[in-house]
Length: 257
Image (cartoon, rainbow, N blue to C red; front, side, top):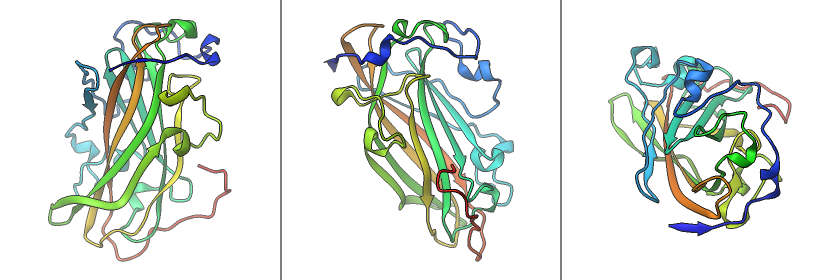
């Protein structure tokens, strides 16, 4: 679907990143050196979806259950998905109140924060902002499935989020472009959710997988009034350690994340 959207004033600003220069099809993962889950699926048509995949790596297994979870193994996770030269980078990490994912049990609240940004890798990261294709996030849909000790999986209402990105993001005044949504292009745009809660789970739960779908509008070329619709899918498995005791939480400042 082609859409005509007027760009916002923030697009006239320039990028001031300290990350160095990256060109062409290079990945942010190669720039940062992070050995975390990555994938590079591509969308071939307007409205096509790309979903990230987690590698079947023994180092990513939750040590106490064998459930595959880079997040639980590493204490945080970065997922990279590249669609037509745009890198979408999702970062998910535990909140300070429950900082150790290896001690997340079925009972009790388990809190995490996450953010999503986009990078136009067809230009240098330090190129002027007007040289980049703008990306806007309109809606977010997150569902979840549970995995039990028996290995059974199934959909769950344990964690569900649906809604307008501008209403879900932590920023009370995000950069919004009409119906297109909030600006996602780094470094001025970001989707940020803080202190999200996974509550009580069945006692035989060993993992919960978050299925994220982000509806975005991508500028066809820098400065163009034409945008293409894309759906970016990312899955985040989170290990749960079997126990009858509740997940411990710490009292932290209200603005901590």
